[in-house]
Image (cartoon, rainbow, N blue to C red; front, side, top):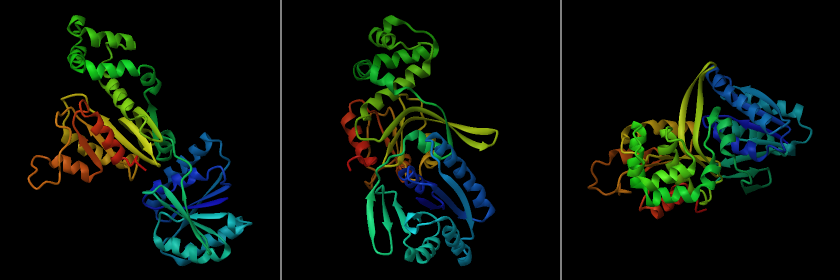
Length: 363
């Protein structure tokens, strides 16, 4: 199989198709515009694909083909290149999902008579059409990118992740801690911050932390990490394709420097990467969080969504009533594909329903 990927503004459109056919591809041709700025932007994509191939032991011959997207002759030149490397036109698949529409139109006009297959991926339905001269068929994706592969293809380096097996092994302790003794635990974490732990003030929560084998001197491990594990236990069986906890990543700024970011829970569904941020604290500025994640959400996925859990007693708000006041931050979040919710305690059923609906787990 020869796969031709036309790059445009949304690189995520090529990765699911590449992953779907990775075991069949012999040659991959990456097509992009000749402009210098565009050329520099696509270099990380080439490097990410090389790393992906190496990780999965794929022997794929990757070629870069530069075109002038405003030139008929330049686009036609790609067809001539295909003639030199293809013995059977039916083995050629052109992913026309991204890039300017005129590129896909011209390539289809020039190649469909030969028996070429044109692929168009629907990122909303997570399906793709294959169009030939005689037919068009729709297919659901058989493969799902894992979170580690998705981040690799996006050019993001994983620094560390929490161990999900800890949550599985200690599920009973973690659930009891937050369901029954969270107020006691909330008082204890304040003393952990100040290194003034008095066991008799919170005997049950203290005993559970001991049973979990955690270090009382590691405040982040106990206060933030445990709540992330608790939320993970609430969603782990809802139908996500992959979930990771406490993910620290580096976004490269230059060859020698990078920008670190940390995400509480990442969850993959139908090749889209979503975020759940778990705030078990009253010391969070919601405005700052929304502004921060409005930009970071697109770093991970062009169509990804996010839920921010806070400690607020009121779990949800009706943002569409005419008399709503002081909810600008909630509205700003919703516009940016972010759902802000209050405390999950006492609202677990509502939270689970929000996760299923907002992240499209019902299908």
